[in-house]
Image 1 (cartoon, each protein chain N blue to C red):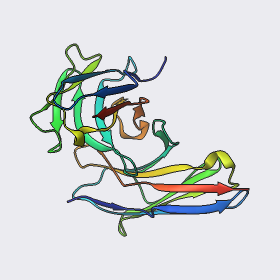
Image 2 (spheres, one colour; image 1 turned 180 degrees about the horizontal axis):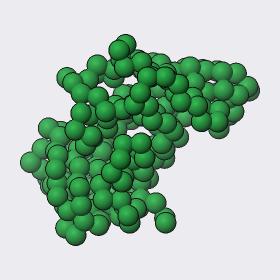
Image 3 (tube, chains in turn red, purple; image 1 turned 180 degrees about the vertical axis):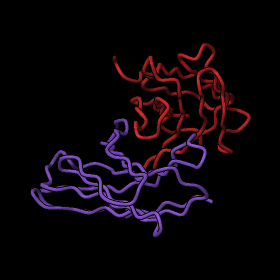
Image 4 (tube, rainbow over the protein chains, first blue to last red; image 1 turned 90 degrees about the vertical axis):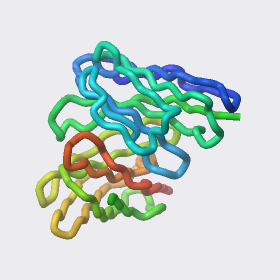
Length: 114
Length: 110
């Protein structure tokens, strides 16, 4: 098992452009989460999938953000019309059901909007 | 609402013991987690407490008091590699999201 993979590791984009990130969770994990982290802050919850169903979305997830997990395996996070305030590390995590396993995080995608 | 407080920074020397405190006020509670995050890397799971008391795992221990909304992470025999950010997180009532504090940056010097 190679852990949680995220692609790309870094993305620089111009304001107004659309970007899409991919997350491949640990294969047997049915739960998948997206978080955003800015410098000096803890990760902020964005959204949660159980299998292919998106069961919870944070108020931080504006209309410009959309996430999918079409077959209950990999997930994508798209940001439309990027703004400078979207610059952050986007972290994906996965877990099994059962609280004491914790989440396994990927290494993140660092987005810089210029 | 959700409020998780932990000190911003702490310093310690190699071989010492350090305690990182976390207080929380959340609308629901399903357990408390501690994560370690080195600069530029992903958070890694350290511990989980759902009942009151102390959980020990090698050099690291974590304590929880649900009535006080309080936890601490105890690191013993500090090593330079323990220099990192330590994140306290509460699992919400539905069990669907971890809510993180801002993290405590620990610097270990020789």
